[in-house]
Length: 389
Image (spheres, rainbow, N blue to C red):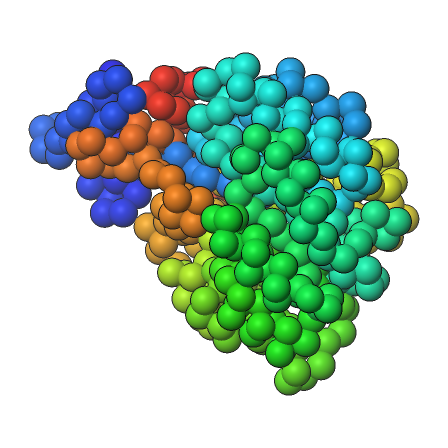
């Protein structure tokens, strides 16, 4: 299979030949093939560390089936996402065990699903019980870190849990973090009311990431002694950022990127199980939620407390170009190679021998004052075309 497009990192027009599941040859196009801008961009397919569900189905649900896992996973194909982490959020022990067990079953039943889902992200239940930092996670199921419970979850998942989001504000949290990190699981700080000292102790113990930094937080924070500044200042923590236009204002995105640098940031969608549904009120496993006309997803009855996102990862890529004033190469890296490196997997690439996980896309600008729209033309996953337009 041959693909023609503009390299996301240089803008050069290329012909890329795929053989099997690898890139075979990459050849610059020097003959007349139309204006380069007539061709789509070509880049590694996206890697999303935080997908809570889609189309009315949460992963953290007693109704989850292997078929639903496969359906959600295939939906990610259409967004240019080749690899993603199904995210199981705070719920009862029984529901969380069912969720990870069902995801594992879906992977065992289908090599294609297993390839697309390189690891499960468990977000909670070991998070802050405090309003604000807890976000939309149900208070009734929030609980302190428990090694035995984590072990039961990991066993039910068949060892597939790769990320655990928790708050280090609990007594004994540092020891728990060290124990989890020693198993090779990424420990990420999130939904926290921790002190700066507790944040540093968590990083000392092996935490390496911040989950959707700037969200799952108090509405008002101290000027100086804040868990936000402590995480921004610690170079050991890679910051996950939701740049969907709702979770972080543009000036916050720019400030975070300047503090952490793009090299220590990854883009995540945090896409909800309600994503893809029409605006209006919807019932979820967490609570009554509402999708506002502009796509903002909130706890029903107000407009400020967010409850996940409704936009796919490509929207975050497009937004960060303008909000963060970064290059397309940097924006793509934050949604491909950098999250893949955290997971210990290889992202797609544009060099011979690289995995043939690729996305062809356009950046559509309908208004010069607005971020462009990320529009997928086609996707290759493991060398197989998935809905090329």
